[in-house]
Amino acid sequence: MDKETSPTSQTPQYTPLDELTVTECFERLKLVSQKGTYKDVSLWLGKKPNDYANRKRSNRIPFAEIIRKLLQERISLNWFFAPGYTLHEPTYSYTQPDYVKSSVAEEERKRRLEFLKAHRKIEPFLKAYNLESDEQCLEVMLDVYFSTKDKWMEKSQALELVAKALSLTPASKRD
Image 1 (cartoon, rainbow, N blue to C red):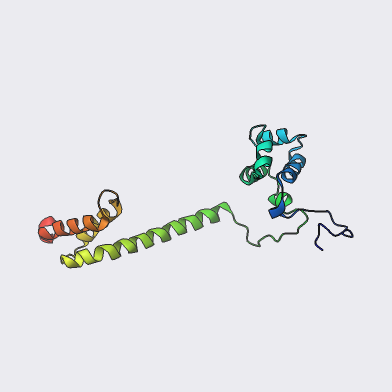
Image 2 (cartoon, one colour):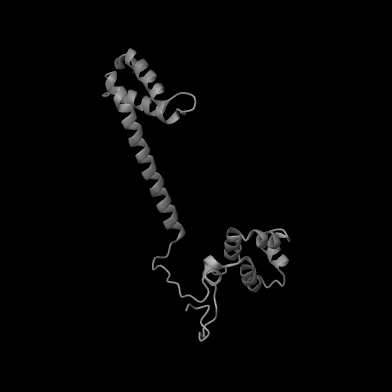
């Protein structure tokens, strides 16, 4: 027998999150919000007064609104979503500077990968027109690659045309 059906269980009866109903959800929210009616809870969540009735009919719990409001009120999500359970918190505390560092590092990694992808696309055109040793041509081709949108002209077609044009004027005359 599980926790809910055991008659000898002395612990409070909790509904697992995946079995949570709209009514149970709003009952928990009544405790937190100190509101007396479901209509008042809906207003507290920032919704229309008839939101509870609509949610009950469609059996859809407003998780996004609940999470937003609980965090706004600085109420533990554990209390709402996992009552009766002892959850383990990670030993690492994630701070704002860490978030910024990791997102900057991730952005830099994405840029490097995009640059490598661009270089792989450009290299065959530079070789085909004997321009691989010319850094100016490489720079122009990279500019073309990153500024070309595939909707008007294919990147490969634009790169081909630019490489062809660059090969017509010797590098010594471009300086």
